[in-house]
Length: 257
Image (cartoon, rainbow, N blue to C red; front, top):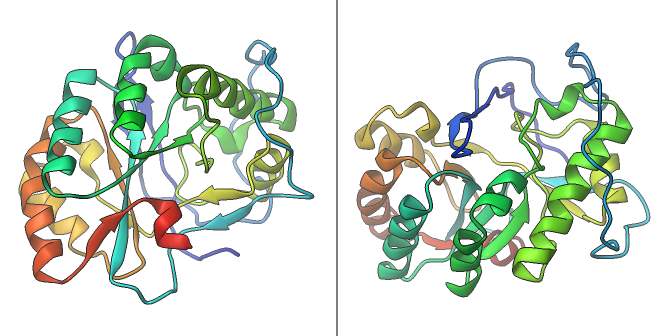
């Protein structure tokens, strides 16, 4: 399953704090093969030492970017990185509105702030894998690409007790065919892309973030980010809009069931 949308994304991971500074920019849409001309890294992340968290599917993962059930639900999905104090603020607002979210965690964030990931888990929310270091993954060769996925998978299992339900590619709204293949090898049956980008990583202000999320429709998967104060400020208005439109924010698993 694939969707068509003419966007690719570029992302900056702030040093030290692992903050998500940027996560999308115009560019070519999804492809069935790796089309990025970015050079492969000269070295791979350290090899995975933990046992695989789950049995690998029979083949490549399936990409999903929205649900087609027709139920009045959307999934707010957050790229997991940044200041854990902001993570706590986001989770408090989510709890106040009786919602549940999916957080796609970056491995370096898991390593630096394991308690933040546990806050997500303990709040009844869903966790997923967003690579170890959030590189321009589509430009990687298969072996280092798999290493990025597996290293985050193993850290996620170590920190939270689960490898996460989904993998999400880094620096791309849609997965390449190679990313689907490597995600499958790492044990992920589904790659979670999205059809609505909040653009909160640009810090455009709460009103602009709220307006972007208002484009979501029943079944939408919305991309948002932990670690941005503007996202926190936008959430009350976002929930007001959802309530007025009869939409409920649920985890991606709930949305796609």
